[in-house]
Length: 212
Ligand SMILES: C[S@@+](CC[C@H](N)C(=O)[O-])C[C@H]1O[C@@H](n2cnc3c(N)ncnc32)[C@H](O)[C@@H]1O
Image (cartoon, rainbow, N blue to C red):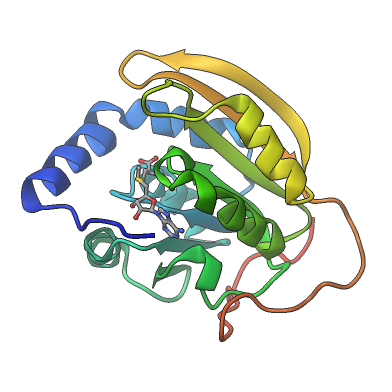
């Protein structure tokens, strides 16, 4: 999977658009998750950090946030803004090969990014995320459904079901600027074992609760 590094203008425009103009949309999405602040959260593909902005104040005291992105420019921006270590790990990697511990996250977030992954790669990404979630942990996903630049709810359901996740809640919505979307909350069923690693090494989030 090849991702083009964004240029300066793209970084500026996307940061302004998502972190300022659309900030309330991201704030509401995070607020609606009902996080308590002590969770271990993995966000895949944070990009400009529009969700990170609202996750940070929630998690930095008692929880832990892991950010994983394949784009170097976004990773550098996140590190400049939030640092790297302590309550947050900022990892430059494809999640399918990232050195993260299986069954170790309470919450995994996929926001407006899976539709950007090439279709044949999407199952591998969702399967990797399902592996990283702890049993009874939750995946929150929201993706645009536009035919030209989006993906269908059916595809999301196929991918999550094939990864062994169960749908708890789902629905369609529309935002003024970003258009129609599908949002879902998925749970990893409780089961014994399966404590292997993804990738070549290990990076366990150092803080946050183990199980709810
Ligand atoms: C549309 S952008 C991010 C949008 C952001 N989540 C938001 O809601 O504003 C998608 C991001 O996902 C990242 N990405 C795509 N596939 C990835 C993968 N397999 N592993 C890690 N990051 C990935 C890209 O580098 C890009 O920064």
